[in-house]
Amino acid sequence: MSDSKVYNDYFFDEPIFDLHDGGYIPLEKADVKDQPLNIPAVIKPDKVDGNDVYYTITAQEGETQILPGKKTKTWGYNASLLGQTIVFKQGVHYHIHLVNKLPEVTTFHWHGLNVTGPVVDGGPHAPVYPDGSRDIDFTLDQPAQTDWLHPHPCPNTARQVWNGLAAAVVVTDDEEAKLPFPRNYGVDDIPVILQDRSYHDNQLDYKADYDVDGTLGKYALVNGTINGVFNVTTQRVRLRILDGSDRREWRLHFDDNHEFTQIASDGGTLPEPVKFTKLMLTCAERAEVIVDFGDKKPGDVVTLMSDDMPIMKFKIGEFAKDDTKLPEHLTTIDAPKVTPGLPVTRTVMSGMDDQVRLDGKLFDMQRIDRKQKIGDTVLWDVVNTNDMDGGMIHPFHMHGCQFLVLSRNGKEPYPNEHGWKDTVGVNAGETVRIAVQFTKFGVYMYHCHILEHEDTGMMAQIEAYDPNHEHKYHLISMDEMNHPKNK
Ligand SMILES: [Cu+2]
Image 1 (spheres, protein in one colour):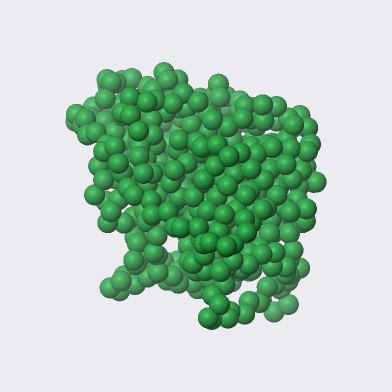
Image 2: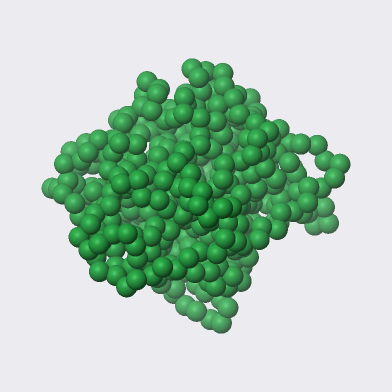
């Protein structure tokens, strides 16, 4: 990539951007004073024993000061809202005690982690009932990346995320640690969790705001803060941006058109840094970017926008000069060779509203829709048919793997899609070809990550199998998940 190339494009198909349909709710400016941006605390381990690290993660109710006046009843992981940030290191064996202090069943899904399914992965087959707990353990064996923890209980994922459950997961490794990236958490390396909510007398009311095509809120929140301000004390700041919304796409840019450099996507470091002035994320996608404020002086304010609405500010303070340049080559993606002789897997996302389907069907927790052998690399054509009202972008997510995006309607993927991903926004009428390899056995979900589409049933299951070791799975029904016989 040439050093000078700066992209000024959101790339996705503009006619289906999330602002044209009848139910679209544009962001509004909230009548809330600027306030410090919430930086979630990093979770502390219960115990460290050599290479074994123990955590307790509790899904809990709480209250959060979001708007002036009455606090808002919210949910979070070890926090009143969102969650403490969980930092994992490649190669470490983690033991996690999952506790549910919510009044209803939930699950703990590790979005982006390659762990066995369906239980450790935390989909709907791994319920944790109120006042109950579950213990999982896994050895983290994937590269540095930004993932996230969120609930996944069918059909209540969207409401539980809306209530506040979402935590940033930061994976580190020795290779990424050598790259000249900012990595001082909370100082020059911060999560930017993008969400939108409306409030009713300062409270959330999911039912009132519900939209079957994806629930939107009128106020933008970053890390749970409305009109948040981050004090910049270093020349370069790394933002771990996550679209943690139920439905909203974010079209990000700075008010002064400041450029920024993407260094990582969902599954970790990009092969080459990509410079932008605009970046669009669809639900559940992540982008790590570095913003170099070297051209700013103390007192300057740079505002991050989505479309025409300010969503947070960077207030420039004193900082030491740091003109560190990124190398042109960041990492090598070891693309697995496609296994010869296997057909292309074709999967179709169709419809809008309550007509959304995956491969023409609604989700059934007790049906295995596909199988793929562990270690095989299979081409998947992920299709978004454009059969209603001009269509919409469906963000396609797979559990249990990171995939490579090979093409969009036969053309090159977007310039920031050359790294590992677990979620890809598919335009209406588009076929996105991806290369999929599972490394762990399990039953995994794949679905649209507009959470209300997922809850409606735009989801299916694949078994990643090891022909030499048969695994039996107890696939519970949605009824059993929601109404345990003997919890
Ligand atoms: Cu969808």
